[in-house]
Length: 254
Image (cartoon, rainbow, N blue to C red; front, side, top):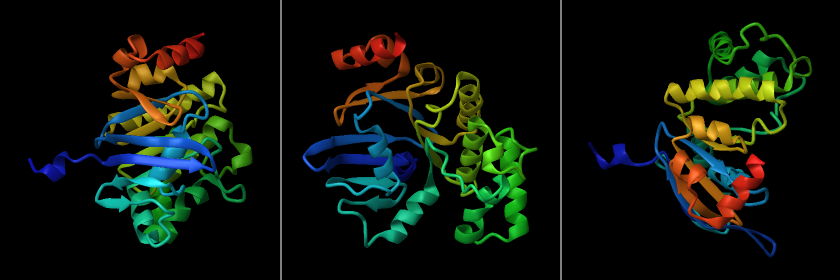
């Protein structure tokens, strides 16, 4: 097998990011293999969401490198690399905590927007694919519903379907269940577990310890801008090496 076949889908090297005097990411390095599910845990303000936004080219950073597939992003805003950012976003889609659906568009219209304008699909083809994706996330009967007519869990599943419409190899999920009640969380996490079984790469910033234990291949703990744990769920969650991790888990598990 070639070295290219063994290379990770996502590789972060010495990623450093400051907001003014505050160091948000401090020499963060880690990689994610294709098909791997990585749960990123840690206290609020530790840099988790910022790291995802750097991977997706939404945030500039001060030092270090992000590689997604063959595409490399460097520090300084990537202003001259808009085409590379677009390719990165084709490979790894992003799903946000607040859904970011267009309120004036129906579920199916939200999903077909990018395939029409970015992938260049014909409308009929995009609609057919969109309906298949809605069925895949358990919303086959809600194609013509507007976001205001959907529950939080349904909106989040539409957002997942919209990300999948670009046919990415992976998804970056930023606290996508944190605003949902337990029943709606279960709906969304069930979809993610199905995607994992289908071989999609998932990087999930989450506080869902149960999901991390059940579905993740690895758990990464990010605190104070640094990765302090990285290993299998059983090791990180049941026998963490770092006192900071133990404190965090004690608060999360009550």
